[in-house]
Every structure is written in structure tokens, then in C-alpha cells.
Image 1: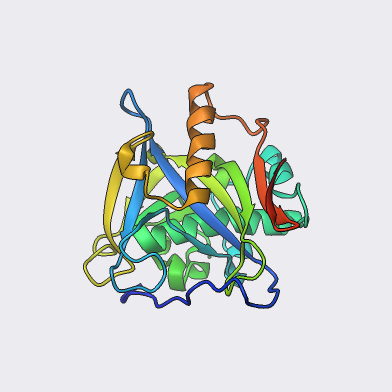
Image 2 (image 1 turned 90 degrees about the vertical axis):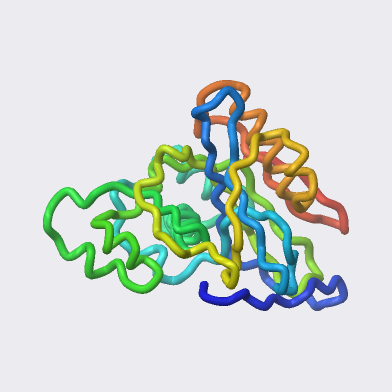
Length: 244
């Protein structure tokens, strides 16, 4: 985005709004002894969370279900994404994973993909926000994503999201778009921060819960789609933690 995005403040007195599907991507660098995650600092002049460190993410776009991909999402991941309530169709599960990749590329310039293996019309379908992939002769690749958590914004907020938090290894970054992060962009700085660092203490409460889950998953060994995934939502005015 070329300029800081203005966002509405949250208002707990707002009437009920149906949550919009959204996806967030937490990139992890495990090349060192302690894993690092990528965070971006938001512009000081945006209304929502100015100057705060966040993970790239946003709403699912209509095109996310139609873009060609290098590989489909694993069936085990699809099962996780279609679990919980409200349930989603397999096509929506694919769109969620693809949206996480698109948002990461848009906001950080880091694109997860694989080279197009043969001549086709796939590049012609990668327009708009997907143009960086076409320019690099890449197709987005959601096959290496893992679901870490799902969370629905509490009722009574101006903006509500049903967010799936994905993680992927930094080795999956296939292309870097220069100039995406700058002084007038939505994200003005990117930083790799060690998991458990005090630098992550100022993050949003839900984000910290998700990071705690990620830390525990990484400490347990290689990531697996069979692992239990927490599903945070609100019922009766209180946050509930179910599992998927």
C-alpha cells in the first residue's frame, strides 16, 4: 500500500456484525538456535494500533480462490480449516491459505511461491496484487503453511474478523519485492525477533496467545497438521478456547 491506511477505532457499543474471513502469516526463521518471527511496525499516523508491531494479514479477497497455485493445500490442512464453527467449504479453506500469502507479499514484499514449471496462461491470471508473482515467474505456494490458531473478534466491534493464523518457514520465501516497506507505507519497518523476546511483550493480547501456541508447537518438534489447534471465540461475554 502506498500510504498509511486509515482504520476505524473499535467501539464495543456497535451492533452485531458478521465477522469477515481473514488470514495472518507468521514467518519463522529457524536457522539459528532460537527461532525468530517476522514483525512489521505500523505507521505512527494510522488510527488503529499506530506504531505497533504486527504480523502481515488481512481480509480474504474474491480473487484468492481463483488464482493458480504451485501446489494445493494438504488435505490435513484443509480438514483443520474446515473444522470449527461456523464451518467453511474446502474452496474457502484454499482461499484462506492463499490470502495469507498474498497479504504477506503486499505488506512486506516477501513472496512465498515456486517457479512456473511450463509455459501456460497462469501468469496472465496473476494480475493486480498478484503481479509480483507473475513478474518473478512464480506461482503462490500454500502447501507449506501450517494452521496455528483461529480467532474471532468479540461481538460489538466496528470491525470483526474470523482470522486464521498460519505459519511458514522463512526458507519458503522465493522472491523479495523492493520498496514495499518505507516511511509512508502501512508497515514502515520489518524486524526478525526471537520468540520469547521482550520486544514481543507489547503485542496485542490475542497475538501473544497465538505466539505462545507457536512457540510450544516448535518446541515439540517438527510442525504437523495433526496437532491440536486452538479456536478462540466469545460466548456469553467471555472468551472461550475450543480446539480444532
